[in-house]
Amino acid sequence: MRRSSWFAFGLAAVLAGVLAGCSAKPTEMAAVPNGNRFVQGGDTITPRLVRQLAKARGIVAYPQPPHVRPALVRLGRELAFDKILGGNHDVSCMTCHLPRYETGDARSLSIGSGGTGLGPDRTHPDGINIPRNAPPFFNLGAMRHLFWDGRVEVDAHGHVSTPAGAQLTPQMTKVFEFGALSAQPMFPPTSAAEMRGSSGNELSGFTDNDVTQIWAGLMHRLGTIPKYRRMFEQAYPGTRFDDMNFAYASNAIAGFIVNDLTFRNSPWDRFLDGDDRALTQQQLDGAAEFLTLKCSICHNGATLSDDQFHNVAVPQIGPGKGNGASGLDDFGRMNVTGDPADQYRFRTSPLRNVELTGPYGHDGSIISLRDFIDHYSNSDEKLMDYNPAQLIAPLRSTVLDNKSAVIAERDTLIVGVVLTPEIEDKLMDYMSALTDPAARNLSRLTPRRVPSGLPIDK
Image (cartoon, rainbow, N blue to C red; front, side, top):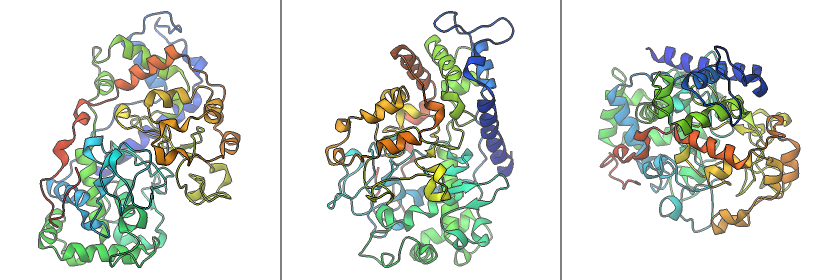
């Protein structure tokens, strides 16, 4: 399947999930044709019934990803792990997306440039945190919106929008092979807090918005390393390195993510492919709960995300994004669109391998998956009663008193949702069926060395 066909398939699957979810009410899912009937706490749940429920919700098998030429994968993998893209050579893309933590860092909020240590042990001498949780890299090739606020996005016609505006030129976007994902890696290296550093290097004198100069500076760095020049020209046959821009590097990292971090062999995938024995009875029961509750109105399609934005009443912790009177708030999607209706909305998280990817929420304020599921039950009360003791000590005092404002804008989909412990148990059983066994150990991804010779975080 050609890349364009694969991306269109993924997009169609997500859109189908949205349409199916919006047109089917939970109460209409209780009865299905051919004699199978789902009675809460009653009849045995069958594979046939669960497939019918999944189809009604627009939940489909994940499409076969495109073939990515090996030279592009190798280049992207080494760029992702190489601290040459960090302003002070102290951080790489994978510093916050470590294989040992399933492409996250097991932190509520990441620590970028200037930090020491890795994962939960990472610290910053000035206590600086990135405002949002580091999302996992799994199956991103089929997503139309990237970052929690969707500031990198691709429309149905393939047009990519980013914070760079016109600085992302047509000459750059023509390089992109993997939709929005090809553009996403262009931006963390431009952020002083994340990778560029605020002092001590030739890139630190720019602002985060001076992306043209930063990208040119990064390509100059890469061009001083003969091995990178060779790798780029092998990955893009017929193009001289001196004629390339940073979009070639970003697209290569995306190719690595698509090739090495697309997982479609979970028990749920095998079930959708027709294997009646792929799920345990407990997982089947959990799937039926998930598919008849409101969960699957937003978590649908091939990725189990509607690729849209919702306010699910998550507590706000950390430094925020400069919003509100305090400057410590985070208005989410509104920062991209300018629409007040988007205040406190964040992108629906894909659920593939979700049991591996905590903490949860745009700022990682809820540590365990079970607690995040429970948060949807009487979410207004859960937000008001939020206990910061679950956070690491430096973040406990950062919980923002914006709870009433968040609740006032809460998505009506979750208003009135009440989950019993028994239902939450079943939902946890279903979540366990979304884990591909190959995602549990990603140590194979880490290269032994990178062309710059800098140390590798792993």
